[in-house]
Amino acid sequence: MNKSLLRVAGIFSIVLLIALQGCRRDPITDDPNARLAFSADTVVFDTVFTTVGSATRQFKVYNRNSSTVNIGSIRLAGGSASPFRINVDGVPLVSTGDIVLKGNDSIYVFVDVTVNPNNSTSPIMISDSIIFETNGNQQRVMLYAVGQDAYFHYYEVQTGNAIWPVDKPHVVYGYVIATNCSKLTIPAGARVHMHRNAVLAADSCATLEILGAHNNPVRVMGTRLEAEYREEPGQWGYIWLSTLSKNNIIDWAEIKNGTIGVLSDSLGASANPTVRISNTTIRNMTLAGIFGRDSWVEGENLVVQNCAEYCAALAYGGNYQFRHCTFGNYWNIGNRTTPSVLLNNWYKVDETTIVRRNLTTADFENCIIYGDKDTEIGLDSNTTGGFQYEYRFRNCLIKTDYNLTPVATRFVNVTVNQDPQFVNISDFDLSLRNNSPARGLGDPAISAFVPFDLRNQLRAADGVYDLGAYEYQ
Image (cartoon, rainbow, N blue to C red; front, top):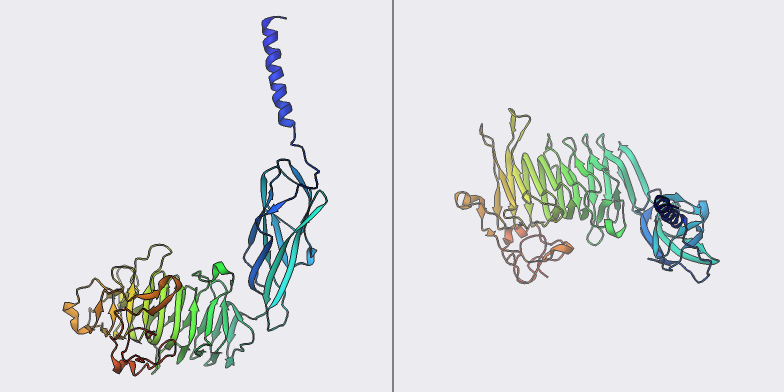
């Protein structure tokens, strides 16, 4: 055999050896001791509303053996009747088998749950398990969820008076709009859960009353109750009080995790404020806590915090009065470039058309306005044509880089750029520490209008009146 043939034969042998090695499969062990391992032996879901799906949970299945194993079966113990659903490495299923898992490899299992209506006012516990069978071994990962029935409101237009019951939560899809001069009352203890982009509104001479109580507030938030969504902004739309609504009241409420907490439109012909907001916390809004558009808003004992743009945007003019309120903005999701409080009396229709309106009053008394920006007050005026731009800060602690000397009559007894020493901004606790410079700076005459703080404690129990919604305890 010549050298050329020997060279070809050698190359062929090498190629054949590589091909045979490529075709060889790792041996699958049938050893009953080759068990699986799991990143979690139990998957728990927080409260899930009936018909509303949960967030998806996941865990990993490991083959910590050196040999390949064949998972003969992965299935829900409850079968197709189970409220849980599983997905193995991207494939949704009720059961499957013959999944080959190489040595020291892993796969993902995803789980979610939907609870059927149960006509119960109390939460119920739901359970199931995922069964894994390998080489005669049976292993389980337990599944638990708490299901809660609710009153569901789907694109609802209310034309008659209504009082929402409080025995079960309320879930709003789309919108609930009170109209036709009706009154919607949401009483103390009610839980209102707003679905994505949902709106709670009053229009056409209707009235919205959110009437909570100390230690029994009305809570308005999103529909996702899992821990990771507990303080997640932007889960729903806004509470909207239209130009044609009247005498709206929000008292002792917790409003969080939306786009705008309260959107209040222009006054119209009413002789009373569009809305009075008192004893209320608003936080985690992707636009603004309070957005007034040429509106009349009165606020007392408010804490508004953690908003992507404004705690209070008082725009296009209007009439505003705030007493013993705390506006604290420490938004840490992205870069906030706007002040906590904006005062504005104009807007552009297009590049050549400007509309001006009167900012008749914007009074802040015994308030705190602070945050992590250089200035937390935005003064944006256009008085061409004699339009009003009237505002005053009296006995307030504010953060600003404005030169206040030319407008000293509008800033009376103010303390500037001194950290108010909030107890814990990361935990949304804007009450005052003992060394807070806001202590003792309140005007008693103003406090007389708001004699109790947001904890329902008497002001000046220690002999001095503090700024903001909380009296030092």
